[in-house]
Image (cartoon, rainbow, N blue to C red; front, top):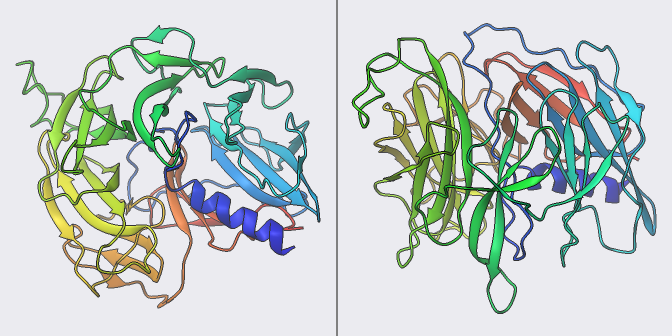
Length: 412
């Protein structure tokens, strides 16, 4: 059905970009990338489930290979939402009771699905005006607990498995956009929201910019505290947040190496104003990608503005890519894909683009496609790719090179 396909496409695109609407709903969470893997690592084997009714409106995975999928099956005046669960090592998806009510009228599907670890997921309603309703499961969808996005209390750190999200605390007078925000933590064991006790030293609309697993080379780290650097090959987790600098509109980054207890800020030299930032990691290298409106080409959605690189855990950044009129890639849908062979891949509005020189130059991938090729997001299980047309086609990779395809939903 066309409506279901559109809903699926919107879900794909919505999962890849932070919502800009006003209100105090949380933005998409910061989730950890998979640990660095060698080139040639076999992709996770995810079973297909074409018999499940509807089009997928959200898919999440945990590091152990388990996952959740949310489906929407829409008729003339009503959309029915359902949930399926993939248990660790299972050969088939398991339908579970959905806690979500049917959607009537022309409201569309607005819910968000958040993975919080093996067997744990949170569904947020995502409507405007916000109701703040949530549904949490800690037992693989067998039971659901109704909750709220409104935070209760504070917490000093983001626990393992928890998610960092944005809460809008002030909107513009016309309700068109958020004017001020703060960071909340979603608790992995309950789905409850807490205020992060120490906020990054950023003003305005602060939001999560990525959670990455960084492999140290042994030559960096400890530079501010005077402590010895980590041993070579040691993996550590960094949290990133961003906000636009007041006045200039240029984004600033803040990084935490202790799960949100303390933060340090760092500028992105040569960054463009009015954009969002996402950070991904490839071994010991970080990439900060800016996406937003391209002033010279208003026809491009999710415009790729700049790519910055850091070899010192985000203490300093070097701009290695900047948009130039007519030069591809002009857009990025989802996350940058830093593969284990050192290449970087951009899924854009006009095809697939690959760089083998650290994002200094890109060439069109061998497929030669000149249409939207879907999006890829970084998940705890690896790179998750989705198609652009909401037909339930997915692919997953551990190394960004070798992919396994699977299908979800019947599209009706």
